[in-house]
Length: 309
Image 1: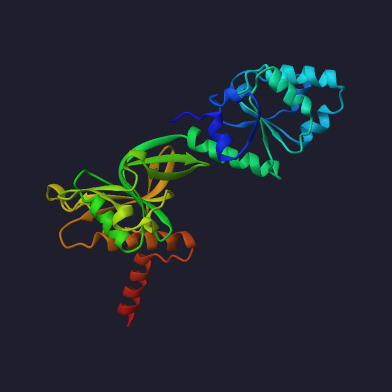
Image 2: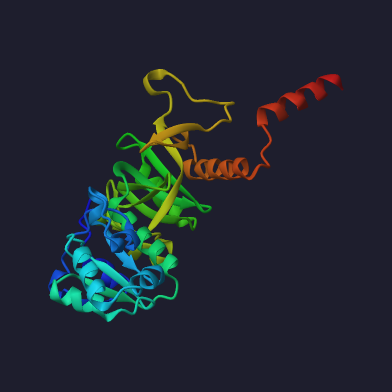
């Protein structure tokens, strides 16, 4: 997990630094944002919550303005002495004494001109997700097909990269190959390429291919939700055909505690695997739409009707 420095939030949200210019490299070590309501009353939580970024807006301003300047200054000093990595003031928090105390204590205090404090807070939390959310790395290819993120897994040499390139040629979106970083956010999984291999595919016999150059940036997708895991397997490995012919259920594949729909597709000479993968994704979408009809049941009903006739 890469470190989240205060300056990354400041730069991303165009925040104005009003004190503590030498503290831009403060490390945000704890996920989350605290509103400073309780802290301004003199109550402080112990533990990691005490080191979260703090936001002060309308409610905090309405409360603190009930006190004289000297009392407000004392309360700010007590708050700013808690080793807080960054204090964010909105335009609705207009007490300049807070800024003066920030300068006196050399605390990192910044301003935002956002109109909605709740929207701003949510956006910062989503930004933090990329640094604090649980993640893992898998050996796979990742592509978005018909709006669904598909993770192709299978043993080395099975043809994941070549199949991915075939799918890109039919206007599906390339996310990554070989090293896929998967992040868990709100109990959903998102996949993206490892930075080292971004836009790159290794094809045996050719070498490294830059998909953005060979196919254009319009086929590149930065990240995608993982909706389906497809394992490519050798057909009749060790002489045994263990593929499911009439099965229609997507079983679960666990990644970071989340079960993702999963199927196996046998690979053999003559099979058009990209077409089969497209069909699998289409079937998943139909199932999720609620319009799905069980094919085995349809076949059984037709057989019974045929026999009756």
